[in-house]
Image: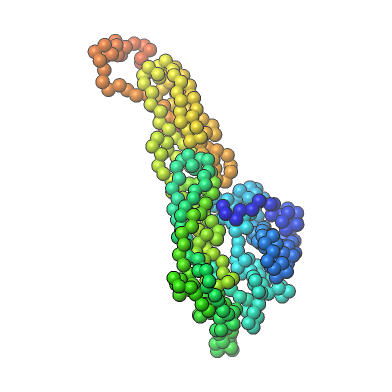
Length: 381
C-alpha cells in the first residue's frame, strides 16, 4: 500500500529485549518518542517516520493480546482482515499518537504536531479530511498472484491560491474553553471551535470556483497494490488518498478499498482451497488418461489411473490460493465425474447389453473405496 515502509522488528525499534517488562517497554518508547518528537525535529520526515514507527511498536507491545500474537507470528499477525492494518507501515497519524499516548511525553513537549501548545495551553487540533470508499472487483487469478489496480477517484482538495488566517474565536488552538457551574464548583471543558471546526484557521481569501471552504473536486488516478490471498469483503486502506480538509495543518483522509470477487466460470473457492469438477467418459475412466488442467497459477498435467471411479478427488498440494496471513497456500481439488452417455448407437447399446452381466462390469467396492460421505468428511478435515 501507499506509504509502506520496510518492516522492522518492534523490539529493535524501541531498543528493548523480547523479555522486557511493561515498564521497560514504556520506558523504551518514551526514549524513542522524545528523541524523534516533531517539536525537536521540525520538518524532518525521517524523524517523523521513526516517531510513528515507535508509536506503532508501543501500541502492539503494550497490549498483552497483540504482543502475544506478534511474538508468535511477527508482522503477519496484523496483516489482512484480522490485522487491523497500519502496523509496521507507518499507518498511524500524529493526532492518533498524541491522543493515545500524549501523557507519556510529560510536560517537556506541547504534545501537538507542528506548533505544540497555543492560546492558553491548549493543543492545536489537526483536522483530518473525510475518508472515501470504493469497490474493486478481482478475478481468482488476480487474487492468487496479487495485483496493482489503478482507479480514478474524485476527491476534494484545497484550491490553489486559497489563503487562511488564524481563527479569532479560538486564537488558532482549534478549541474553545467553556466554564459551567456545577454543584462541585466551576468546571472547565474544552470543545471543538464552532467557527473553524478545529482547524484553528479560517479562510482569508479563496479563488473563484472553490466552495465555501476553499475546496475543489479533482479526478486523480490512484495505484492500489492489492496483496495476494485477499477475499470478498476485505477492506484495504490507502493512506492520505481521501478528501483533504481546509487549513494549512490539515491532513487528508484515507481511501478505503472494499474487495469484491468475480465468480469464476469453472472454479469454486473455499477459503484458500480451489475446487474443480472434471468430467471424463467411460473409456477414459476404464483405460486411464492424461489431462491438462488450468489452475489459478497456470496449467498442470495430471494422470488419471485406469479404473478410476466417479467421485474420486485428486488433491494438488499447494496449487490453491495463498493465505493473506502468509501461512502457505491452499490445495487444488479435482473432483472426478464419470459421464454416463445418454444417447447410444445400436452397436454401442448391444455392447453394453452384452457387458451388463459381465464380472468386470459388476460393482465390487472394497474397504479402500470410500463412500461419498467419507470423502466429504476427509475433504473438510
